[in-house]
Image 1 (cartoon, rainbow, N blue to C red):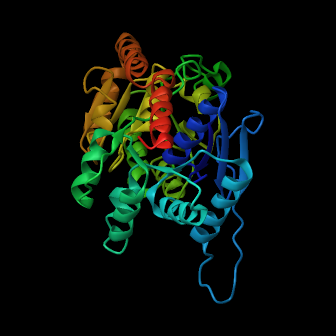
Image 2: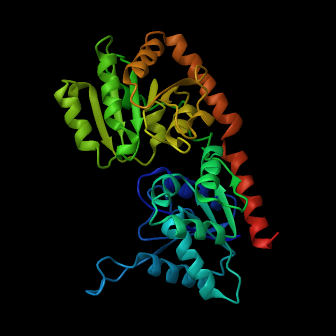
Image 3: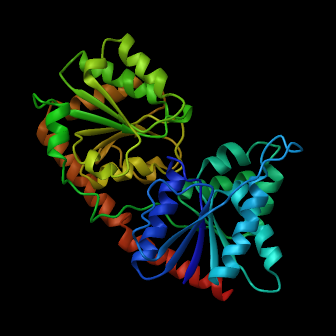
Length: 374
């Protein structure tokens, strides 16, 4: 198959999933064409079946903002014509599916089907805004196929947008051959030279991720035992999180690593992963940690309970409950056998339900159905 993929190329779950999906398809012999304003953060152009087409947006004095959605639609059509695409797969309803609708209309009478994958904030934040609700609903209804990454997101989309068409659930995934317990020994030695337990947080540092809560949780842990905290990623709340760590006197024990490509090398060095988000439609970062045999403490929100089994491979608390999260963390970190046991269960759970070798065929079959029109 020849597939065009559009996603936000920034450091976030939807872009990561879209890129990893494209890479997995390319490894299986399909030809993948990424169409966006910048190369996705985890895209590997060394893969011969992976191609990138940049959407260039011109600015005019007439426009307050560059017309990206229109430029994207034009580039989609161009790539369809030049590369004989069989399908477009767009991640995030707004504005990508709207651009795909325009590209499909311009391609007529030639057939250019497209699939929209809903990731979360396109529904829970952007789409639920009354200003965007009608066009979000329209773009979902007009898609040739629609998938959601969790049962939670499927149900919320149907309820809030009154969707009458089927939405397929295909969960996020992780390559279980890459995400393993192959720890970066040099990283552990550098961050925890005395063998202290390492906690990690990975996100885009947007307010919804509550990165400051990770620092607050760590502060309570440090009151009870030696430990180190590694914060991976970048975004609006990074500076505030750094200042909080400094204000609490934790800065010698907290490392901010910024954006990282091969996060599996870092996650495998962790003893515990923190995901204190206000809302998660799935919790991809938690899954990546679990595949590396790292137990997770996360919030009981959205689709997270579909990924983390409370009391089995991690613990779930309510958003903002830093005391409860710290209490569970101390329980895990103060008993090495407890952490190892929960980590092994976490990997077993990830392998059973979310390995790419099992999820990619679901996408392949769904692509084939949409292309055939069945």
